[in-house]
Image (cartoon, rainbow, N blue to C red; front, side, top):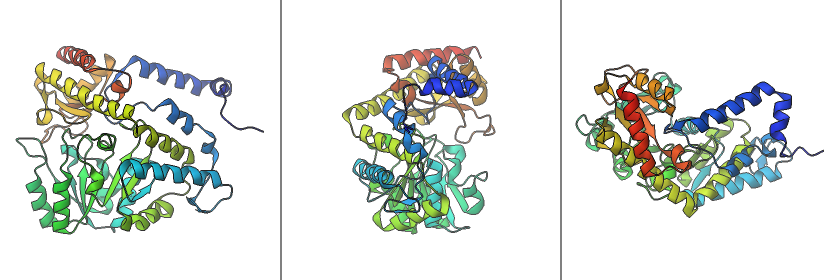
Length: 396
């Protein structure tokens, strides 16, 4: 009996569960009818979605290729080996693990491989653009470890590497974290490497947001400097939701054991197949052109908002996102995001460096261009979108 995917799967879903089918249709309509400027997502390619919905979704494959705890894993082994080989070629990493089910799970594996509960870490403050998995008190990383934070320079709103060095030499962290979720400038990984060497820390780059840019030659390459790099494939890379770990060879065994069996059981083989597709697509000239357009569109949008009287944090952007101050309009970030959502423009609320507003309100919005660029938007389109944002916020 065949269990493969067929052209009638949509009809089968509707026949079996019309409520879910209606919600799938509703999400398609929502996405098609909105201008999405969510910086942390994009649109997966048709080939990625085909792999993600393939028969590999049924396969349980606990362990690693050649060392599984279940039978019938011969083809699953080939899929994982192919994904690893493609990622190694794409990123230039010695060690690759494609099993993490998310970017945050990949981050958890870094802690498990390199740190013990109570060990110190030094990372960018959440209120200055960092990520909750880098030591937030609401996250396991802030409860089980001892985080300290560096902040952006008040005048430039950029990372001050001299201050990072001072903090690292004072706190002597086990992990020095370079990475952010709302930072629009390139990070100087060479400087962070030097700091890590001086204080004896493991340098971990969380490249969830920027990995898809670095492989296109935009910005510095984190793999060249870090001990370990974590990646999320669903953002600029247009892949499935999932994580990847890249590291120096000497750290491979510890990271493999951290992912399995410490954190996970059987991996999502269909997601690994979809990651393999993503790595192949990301190695093409078409992808590199897409990544360049993402950055060009981000700059065009930031410039238009600046020309329209809004302040962009750090004065601009070098990547796929910008953080925009809306406090001059007497709006919180939440109020601005809600007003734009009503107008069909989807953004994220955000906080400014040194923001007096609470995190759940903020004084800024974060705008990103991966999704609209995947839909064919040009720099001229971004000017028009910027005009619409300005109009909506002026009347909010």
